[in-house]
Image (tube, rainbow, N blue to C red):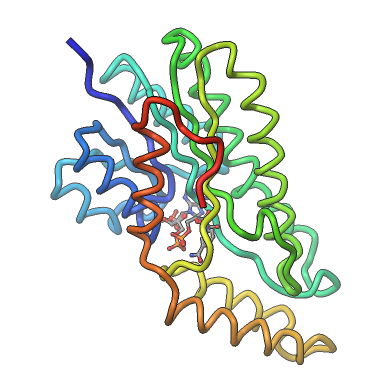
Length: 243
Ligand code: NDP
Protein backbone atom coordinates (compact mmCIF):
# COMPACT_ATOMS: atom_id res chain seq x y z
CA UNK A 1 0.00 0.00 0.00
CA UNK A 2 1.27 3.49 -0.84
CA UNK A 3 2.34 5.46 2.23
CA UNK A 4 1.07 8.97 2.94
CA UNK A 5 3.68 11.52 1.96
CA UNK A 6 5.35 13.58 4.72
CA UNK A 7 6.20 17.27 4.18
CA UNK A 8 7.99 20.00 6.10
CA UNK A 9 6.97 23.57 5.22
CA UNK A 10 9.05 26.46 6.59
CA UNK A 11 7.65 29.95 7.22
CA UNK A 12 4.12 28.62 7.74
CA UNK A 13 2.99 31.35 10.17
CA UNK A 14 1.97 33.71 7.39
CA UNK A 15 1.17 34.27 3.73
CA UNK A 16 2.45 31.76 1.19
CA UNK A 17 3.79 29.17 3.68
CA UNK A 18 0.47 29.06 5.54
CA UNK A 19 -1.41 28.49 2.27
CA UNK A 20 1.07 25.78 1.20
CA UNK A 21 0.68 23.89 4.50
CA UNK A 22 -3.13 23.97 4.22
CA UNK A 23 -3.16 22.89 0.61
CA UNK A 24 -0.75 19.97 1.03
CA UNK A 25 -2.79 18.85 4.06
CA UNK A 26 -6.00 18.99 1.99
CA UNK A 27 -4.24 16.77 -0.55
CA UNK A 28 -3.63 14.06 2.05
CA UNK A 29 -0.02 14.90 2.91
CA UNK A 30 1.13 14.64 6.55
CA UNK A 31 2.31 18.22 7.04
CA UNK A 32 4.74 19.60 9.60
CA UNK A 33 4.64 23.40 9.63
CA UNK A 34 7.47 25.48 11.10
CA UNK A 35 8.04 29.14 11.97
CA UNK A 36 9.32 31.25 14.85
CA UNK A 37 5.88 32.63 15.78
CA UNK A 38 4.21 29.38 16.83
CA UNK A 39 1.07 31.15 18.11
CA UNK A 40 0.49 32.42 14.56
CA UNK A 41 -0.06 28.81 13.42
CA UNK A 42 -3.05 28.00 15.68
CA UNK A 43 -5.25 27.91 12.58
CA UNK A 44 -3.08 25.08 11.23
CA UNK A 45 -3.21 23.21 14.58
CA UNK A 46 -6.99 23.35 14.33
CA UNK A 47 -6.80 21.53 10.98
CA UNK A 48 -4.66 18.74 12.49
CA UNK A 49 -1.38 19.99 11.03
CA UNK A 50 1.60 19.62 13.39
CA UNK A 51 3.14 23.03 14.07
CA UNK A 52 6.68 23.40 15.37
CA UNK A 53 8.93 26.19 16.54
CA UNK A 54 11.54 26.63 13.81
CA UNK A 55 14.16 29.30 13.24
CA UNK A 56 15.92 28.48 9.97
CA UNK A 57 19.00 30.45 11.08
CA UNK A 58 19.50 28.20 14.13
CA UNK A 59 21.16 24.82 13.42
CA UNK A 60 19.85 23.29 16.69
CA UNK A 61 16.31 24.34 15.89
CA UNK A 62 16.56 22.85 12.39
CA UNK A 63 18.00 19.59 13.73
CA UNK A 64 15.31 19.30 16.42
CA UNK A 65 12.52 19.70 13.87
CA UNK A 66 13.93 17.23 11.36
CA UNK A 67 14.73 14.66 14.10
CA UNK A 68 11.17 14.89 15.39
CA UNK A 69 9.64 14.33 11.96
CA UNK A 70 11.89 11.36 11.26
CA UNK A 71 11.24 9.80 14.67
CA UNK A 72 7.45 10.23 14.31
CA UNK A 73 7.01 9.18 10.68
CA UNK A 74 10.24 7.47 9.65
CA UNK A 75 10.51 9.60 6.51
CA UNK A 76 10.53 13.03 4.83
CA UNK A 77 9.22 13.15 1.26
CA UNK A 78 8.82 16.88 0.66
CA UNK A 79 10.76 19.90 1.95
CA UNK A 80 9.31 23.31 1.10
CA UNK A 81 11.87 26.04 1.78
CA UNK A 82 9.55 29.03 1.94
CA UNK A 83 10.80 31.10 4.93
CA UNK A 84 12.15 34.42 3.73
CA UNK A 85 11.82 38.18 3.77
CA UNK A 86 12.81 41.14 1.63
CA UNK A 87 15.56 43.40 2.93
CA UNK A 88 15.14 46.65 1.00
CA UNK A 89 17.20 49.82 0.65
CA UNK A 90 20.04 51.22 -1.42
CA UNK A 91 23.16 49.08 -1.24
CA UNK A 92 25.10 52.05 0.15
CA UNK A 93 22.61 52.43 3.01
CA UNK A 94 22.26 48.79 4.11
CA UNK A 95 24.74 47.70 6.81
CA UNK A 96 26.55 44.52 5.77
CA UNK A 97 25.43 42.82 8.99
CA UNK A 98 21.82 43.17 7.77
CA UNK A 99 22.81 41.81 4.35
CA UNK A 100 24.36 38.79 6.08
CA UNK A 101 21.15 38.27 8.06
CA UNK A 102 19.23 38.35 4.77
CA UNK A 103 21.40 35.61 3.32
CA UNK A 104 21.24 33.63 6.56
CA UNK A 105 17.47 33.25 6.13
CA UNK A 106 16.87 33.29 2.37
CA UNK A 107 19.91 31.24 1.27
CA UNK A 108 21.67 29.54 4.19
CA UNK A 109 18.35 28.86 5.94
CA UNK A 110 17.23 26.83 2.94
CA UNK A 111 20.64 25.13 2.72
CA UNK A 112 20.54 24.17 6.42
CA UNK A 113 17.20 22.46 5.93
CA UNK A 114 18.41 20.72 2.78
CA UNK A 115 21.53 19.38 4.50
CA UNK A 116 19.41 18.18 7.37
CA UNK A 117 16.80 16.26 5.31
CA UNK A 118 19.16 14.79 2.72
CA UNK A 119 20.37 11.77 4.75
CA UNK A 120 16.72 10.62 5.06
CA UNK A 121 15.90 11.34 1.42
CA UNK A 122 19.03 9.50 0.24
CA UNK A 123 18.05 6.51 2.36
CA UNK A 124 14.57 6.59 0.80
CA UNK A 125 16.10 7.07 -2.65
CA UNK A 126 13.30 9.57 -3.18
CA UNK A 127 12.36 13.07 -2.13
CA UNK A 128 11.40 16.47 -3.39
CA UNK A 129 13.05 19.74 -2.42
CA UNK A 130 10.98 22.79 -3.34
CA UNK A 131 12.61 26.18 -2.97
CA UNK A 132 10.49 29.33 -3.09
CA UNK A 133 12.60 31.89 -4.92
CA UNK A 134 10.97 34.89 -6.66
CA UNK A 135 10.66 36.76 -9.90
CA UNK A 136 13.43 38.73 -8.14
CA UNK A 137 15.56 35.60 -8.55
CA UNK A 138 15.51 36.33 -12.27
CA UNK A 139 15.08 40.09 -12.70
CA UNK A 140 17.02 42.88 -10.98
CA UNK A 141 15.25 45.64 -9.01
CA UNK A 142 16.60 48.90 -7.57
CA UNK A 143 16.45 49.21 -3.76
CA UNK A 144 16.44 45.41 -3.44
CA UNK A 145 20.01 44.39 -4.18
CA UNK A 146 20.47 42.04 -1.21
CA UNK A 147 17.05 40.44 -1.59
CA UNK A 148 17.61 40.01 -5.34
CA UNK A 149 21.11 38.62 -4.71
CA UNK A 150 19.77 36.13 -2.15
CA UNK A 151 17.09 34.89 -4.56
CA UNK A 152 19.49 34.71 -7.56
CA UNK A 153 21.77 32.68 -5.27
CA UNK A 154 18.95 30.35 -4.27
CA UNK A 155 18.15 29.82 -7.96
CA UNK A 156 21.79 28.91 -8.68
CA UNK A 157 22.03 26.66 -5.65
CA UNK A 158 18.81 24.88 -6.70
CA UNK A 159 19.96 24.36 -10.30
CA UNK A 160 23.29 22.87 -9.17
CA UNK A 161 21.64 20.75 -6.51
CA UNK A 162 19.18 19.33 -9.05
CA UNK A 163 22.06 17.90 -11.07
CA UNK A 164 23.68 16.44 -7.95
CA UNK A 165 20.53 14.82 -6.61
CA UNK A 166 18.88 13.56 -9.79
CA UNK A 167 20.96 10.33 -9.83
CA UNK A 168 19.78 9.68 -6.25
CA UNK A 169 16.07 9.94 -7.16
CA UNK A 170 15.61 13.31 -5.46
CA UNK A 171 14.00 16.21 -7.39
CA UNK A 172 14.81 19.88 -6.84
CA UNK A 173 12.17 22.37 -7.96
CA UNK A 174 12.01 26.15 -7.81
CA UNK A 175 8.83 28.20 -7.56
CA UNK A 176 9.16 31.82 -8.68
CA UNK A 177 6.26 33.92 -7.37
CA UNK A 178 5.52 37.40 -8.67
CA UNK A 179 3.82 39.86 -6.30
CA UNK A 180 1.66 38.08 -3.70
CA UNK A 181 -0.54 39.57 -0.96
CA UNK A 182 1.04 38.77 2.41
CA UNK A 183 3.06 40.43 5.19
CA UNK A 184 6.07 40.42 2.88
CA UNK A 185 5.42 43.85 1.33
CA UNK A 186 4.79 45.49 4.74
CA UNK A 187 8.08 44.16 6.10
CA UNK A 188 9.92 45.19 2.91
CA UNK A 189 8.36 48.69 3.01
CA UNK A 190 9.45 49.24 6.59
CA UNK A 191 13.05 48.20 5.75
CA UNK A 192 12.98 50.60 2.82
CA UNK A 193 11.71 53.52 4.87
CA UNK A 194 14.24 52.82 7.64
CA UNK A 195 17.29 52.55 5.38
CA UNK A 196 16.75 54.86 2.39
CA UNK A 197 13.49 56.71 3.12
CA UNK A 198 15.22 60.01 3.94
CA UNK A 199 18.70 59.91 2.44
CA UNK A 200 20.22 60.60 -1.00
CA UNK A 201 18.23 57.72 -2.57
CA UNK A 202 14.90 59.10 -1.34
CA UNK A 203 13.36 59.52 -4.82
CA UNK A 204 14.12 55.99 -5.97
CA UNK A 205 13.02 54.71 -2.56
CA UNK A 206 9.66 56.50 -2.96
CA UNK A 207 9.13 54.84 -6.35
CA UNK A 208 9.98 51.44 -4.88
CA UNK A 209 7.60 52.12 -1.96
CA UNK A 210 4.76 52.76 -4.43
CA UNK A 211 5.44 49.40 -6.09
CA UNK A 212 5.41 47.62 -2.70
CA UNK A 213 2.07 49.27 -1.92
CA UNK A 214 0.66 47.96 -5.20
CA UNK A 215 1.97 44.46 -4.41
CA UNK A 216 0.14 44.58 -1.10
CA UNK A 217 -3.14 45.80 -2.61
CA UNK A 218 -3.50 44.32 -6.06
CA UNK A 219 -1.43 41.18 -6.44
CA UNK A 220 -2.52 37.54 -6.34
CA UNK A 221 -3.45 35.61 -3.23
CA UNK A 222 -1.01 33.10 -1.64
CA UNK A 223 -3.28 30.20 -2.70
CA UNK A 224 -2.07 30.71 -6.29
CA UNK A 225 1.44 29.69 -5.20
CA UNK A 226 0.13 26.87 -3.00
CA UNK A 227 -1.45 25.31 -6.11
CA UNK A 228 1.92 25.44 -7.90
CA UNK A 229 3.58 23.80 -4.90
CA UNK A 230 0.94 21.03 -4.95
CA UNK A 231 1.87 20.31 -8.55
CA UNK A 232 5.60 20.45 -7.78
CA UNK A 233 5.20 18.19 -4.75
CA UNK A 234 2.68 15.65 -5.95
CA UNK A 235 2.96 15.22 -9.72
CA UNK A 236 4.80 12.15 -10.91
CA UNK A 237 7.35 14.15 -12.92
CA UNK A 238 7.70 17.73 -11.66
CA UNK A 239 8.92 20.55 -13.87
CA UNK A 240 12.16 22.19 -12.76
CA UNK A 241 10.47 25.57 -12.21
CA UNK A 242 6.97 26.94 -11.83
CA UNK A 243 6.00 30.63 -12.01
P1 NDP B 1 5.37 36.62 4.81
O1 NDP B 1 6.14 37.75 5.40
O2 NDP B 1 3.88 36.69 4.87
O3 NDP B 1 5.86 35.24 5.47
C1 NDP B 1 7.22 34.95 5.65
C2 NDP B 1 7.37 33.71 6.52
O4 NDP B 1 8.77 33.46 6.69
C3 NDP B 1 6.75 33.87 7.90
O5 NDP B 1 5.97 32.74 8.20
C4 NDP B 1 7.96 33.96 8.82
O6 NDP B 1 7.66 33.32 10.07
C5 NDP B 1 8.98 33.13 8.06
N1 NDP B 1 10.35 33.41 8.49
C6 NDP B 1 11.05 34.55 8.37
N2 NDP B 1 12.25 34.41 8.96
C7 NDP B 1 12.29 33.15 9.46
C8 NDP B 1 13.25 32.40 10.19
N3 NDP B 1 14.43 32.91 10.56
N4 NDP B 1 12.96 31.12 10.52
C9 NDP B 1 11.78 30.57 10.19
N5 NDP B 1 10.82 31.23 9.51
C10 NDP B 1 11.08 32.50 9.17
O7 NDP B 1 5.86 36.51 3.30
P2 NDP B 1 5.40 35.58 2.08
O8 NDP B 1 4.50 34.53 2.54
O9 NDP B 1 4.95 36.47 0.99
O10 NDP B 1 6.82 35.01 1.65
C11 NDP B 1 7.13 33.62 1.58
C12 NDP B 1 8.29 33.44 0.62
O11 NDP B 1 7.89 33.85 -0.69
C13 NDP B 1 9.54 34.24 0.95
O12 NDP B 1 10.68 33.46 0.70
C14 NDP B 1 9.46 35.42 -0.02
O13 NDP B 1 10.71 35.97 -0.29
C15 NDP B 1 8.85 34.74 -1.23
N6 NDP B 1 8.21 35.64 -2.18
C16 NDP B 1 7.18 36.48 -1.78
C17 NDP B 1 6.59 37.34 -2.70
C18 NDP B 1 5.50 38.29 -2.33
O14 NDP B 1 5.19 39.21 -3.14
N7 NDP B 1 4.84 38.15 -1.21
C19 NDP B 1 7.02 37.36 -4.11
C20 NDP B 1 8.08 36.44 -4.42
C21 NDP B 1 8.64 35.61 -3.49
P3 NDP B 1 8.12 33.81 11.53
O15 NDP B 1 8.37 35.29 11.46
O16 NDP B 1 6.97 33.42 12.40
O17 NDP B 1 9.35 33.00 11.81
